[in-house]
Every structure is written in C-alpha cells, then in structure tokens.
Length: 282
Image (cartoon, rainbow, N blue to C red):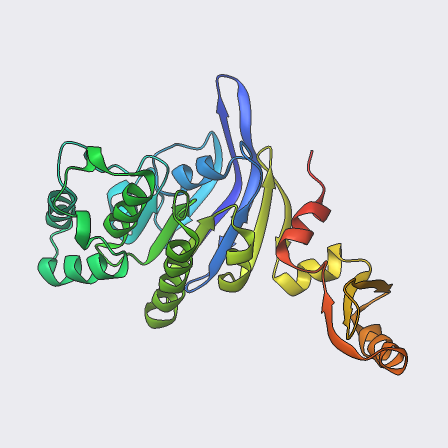
C-alpha cells in the first residue's frame, strides 16, 4: 500500500531524511517512533504529496504522490499538528464543508456517526476559535476520517486528549482496521497505546531508520536479559531478579515458588517503552 525506496529530503542544505525505506502492506497498523525532530512529520508530508523528495521513490497504492497528488489525498486521511480546520467556522460547518469537498453521499449520517465517536455534540455548533487543544484534535480526527480513507496518516493523533479520550481513539482505529482493512501509519509518543494496536514498528532518528519489526522481533534483538518483579505474600517490597531468556522464566518461577508464597511475577523490560530506550539514539 505504501512503498518508500531510498528517499532523501533536505531543507536549506540540511538533510532531514536520509535514504529512507518503508513498506506498509494493506491492512497493517504501523507505529512510526522517534524523538522530536527525528523526521516523522516530514515522512508523512512526503507520503501524501505535500513535499517532493530530492531523491528516491514513493508509491501509495501504485500512485506517485507528486504526480498523482489528488488521487493520493483522496485515498488518504492525514492528520498533522496543523489539522486544516477553519477557526472562524463552527465545528459543524467545518465537517459539512469538507464532506462537500469529498462529495459524500451520506454526509448527514457520516457526520452524526463521527460526532458520536469523538463526543463532539456538546460543542459542534461553536466556532473552532473557542475550542481547547483537545477539542480541536477530536474535530481534526473526525475531519480526517470523513471520506472513509483507505490509508490513515496520523501524526500524534492523541496529543491534547485526556487518557480516556486517547484510549477511545485507539479503540476506534482498531475497530476501523478490523472492519475495513484500513492501512494506518501512526506517529505517537504514547508507546503504551501503540503497543496494543500496531502490528509493526519503525524507529527513526535524524532521518534514518534505526530499527524495524514486530514487537516479538524487537524483543529478540533488544532485550538481552529478562527482568522479573516478584510480589510475595506478606512483603511490601518486590523481589527483583533476572534470567538469560524467555525460556528460563518458567524454571525461575518454579524455583521461586519453592521459597516464597508468590502472588505475582511480571516481566518489566520487554514492553515497547523499554525497547525504545534500548534501541540507542544519537
């Protein structure tokens, strides 16, 4: 669905994307992860044709974003920090305006559906200039999904949202992906949420790919020893211990159970956030 081959991009002589390769298959949810300034937003703008690469090739469903920009943007829903909504218009007027641009036949039903999903009803008739950051983000997400895009390009989609609202957004993305096989590329710092929705992860730093793989593949590469926290009945503190690999965990638990009344044994260093810090950033 998305293919990038040896893509380069510079601004004022400074190379910000350096020979980047990316392949995202139809129906995948891929997390694009990296520190601020790593090049994530630039990649999204290259994919949807808002920026032209200096070198390399980009295809979205066999369309080149620069040559076939209108086709690419019709099949993509893109959300960046600048959501493209109009401050002087109400939320409802914004949604109706963009629904008209996409020539939606079921405009009223689609707006009602998204209004319910993102809890927009209470402020939809107010001008956007009065919205909080979270309200703007929710409206921007609704606008992005109006035309039921085949591909979603989401840059920090939950910034400014409270934890419950952020959880709802990720749940909706999962539901959308399952129902319609929507391909989703998400840039986010909320790694705990990404871990539960993404099928694969791409780590980027200073415009270069640092790592790529499923969670299990990343664990095999970056988790060298398994750290366990053990909760024991009658003790307030945790017992901390390590083993060489996953295959040693059952035997370790068995040995611990002979000495202690175990309540819980938890692996604490193989989640996505732990892997992020193990990747090694420049």
